Length: 142
Image (cartoon, rainbow, N blue to C red):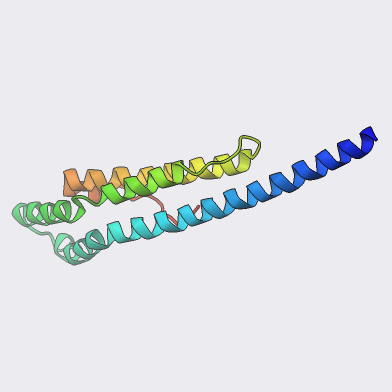
């Protein structure tokens, strides 16, 4: 009888764990997809301005033209970090059981990647010159 109860409890625990794990995986994937879309949208105006500015900068633009271009880049980035912060909080709020360390690491890695984009966008908004620093790796979901 004890063996039967143990087998039943083990099977129940396995089924519950599998269901929870699948839910966590789906939540992480959905969060990553949403975050990637938000980051891509946040970068769109910066990429557009930067694409127009590059030929001018490569052509040895004057200091005044460079200053103006960096100001435009800064204005393009204003407010871009706010929706990325919401995406970061969304990913950080994905509930993962401690018995799934691989999924905890995946969530934490995703949050770190989104934070890198948030910080970069905030830096570009502060000073367009930050666009010259290393851009974060593309966010392709979690």
